[in-house]
Image (cartoon, rainbow, N blue to C red; front, top):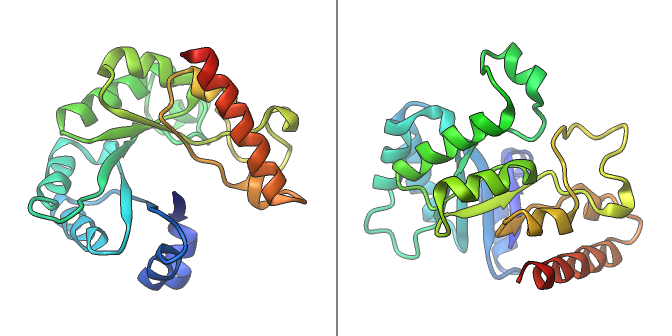
Length: 212
């Protein structure tokens, strides 16, 4: 799938989804909705009408009622996208979490939010690879786990300009139980994006074999 995030969507709007949908099998619309239930329900219903949107994100910190409203908004929708609950952004470490009032290590907070997403009927959650194994143990095999903050082994995890705090290599992310990896800058910022993408795919395939 091609991921469309808030930067492109803010610049180009729904037209970006329509144009990219002509080129790819599916769209991961990563807009991380977080608002009052009625507003999020309307946004989800509108997003579901866009072509080829297969996955759609919202923040679990919006609460149970908000997630219920999002799910209800998809009732009767044809080819409804999978709703993913974003837990803790991968740019936040334990110190940053404490400063915004979320006590405890990231892993414990992520697991609590993942269980809340499961209770709300979300189809999956978004979390870093560092929490994926604990999340899988907590929510079981059915919920999808989407892992961002993926950095190839050849990049030594992260560089000085990287704002991601909790990162993992593609191989480690797959071995930790991820169903989908979100990979952006390691490909878009590479001198040869096609070669970078191929290298990541090879690492993922090798990790899948070792996991099975």
